[in-house]
Image (tube, rainbow, N blue to C red; front, side, top):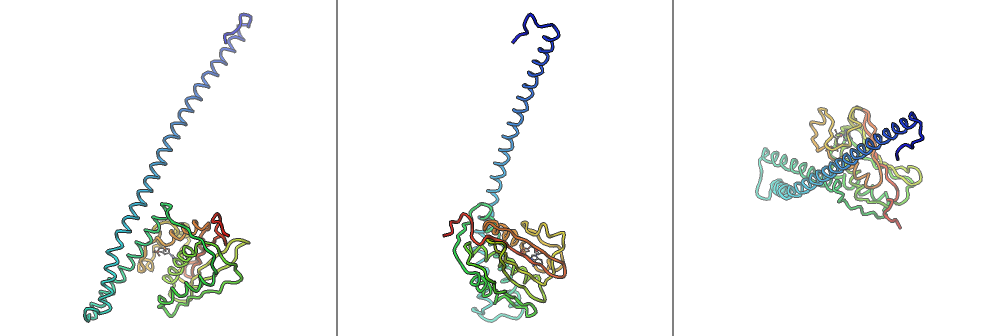
Length: 288
Ligand code: ADP
């Protein structure tokens, strides 16, 4: 709208100036707006690229792990045949070498399994199948699983009978997988003392499982990163006991799938406590 004839000249000028200012401001705003929209679409594109890259990585890992399984399994079976002397006797040296092949193939198979599990979790393809179960049953299954691998008489594996803990409604296989990782690490890094598995109620509707050991412990600078993929502590013991560095990161992801979290407290030279806290009943699973 143009300034009226009666407007005093200074007022008309001021009006015109503020109109121009408003116009400039609007133009500037529109430009900023366009910039923001462009930025958003760029972000969208990058998010899409990231999603694609993650999916490709997961697919590659899944494919590779799957393809590795067959040859590894045949190496393991043939080594087993040789160890069992099915085709005749072995010299002492040959027996040592075949044992070595068997051990390494087993380690490799474990690594492939971990990679495949990680890829499945990342691709959102892990199915959670909750069911009701008693904790004592979980503990005795774990006790049975570890009995054959307890080769060091200086380390006791103790399952503290769970106190008054109600039945759980969650995926017991995933929970067992997390605890198995914690227990086998604890046994691996403990030369003397004990590995203790316990459970306690956490508030009205959560439970915490802990695996404590009297092993080498973990230096404070590693505590923050130990649950990340491929994280391993740099130490002479670590170098001797090779692993994949995938077990804990998988455990963390599995715990999250069960609606829970993992924790770690450790003191070098004294030992570590790895824990997982999960809801007694998996939310959204439609517990009856
Ligand atoms: P891996 O054992 O296959 O290397 P993990 O993800 O299970 O991979 O563990 C990562 C690292 O964390 C291990 O290599 C080890 O350095 C450290 N760690 C795990 N558990 C313990 C433990 N109970 N005591 C000392 N160090 C541990």
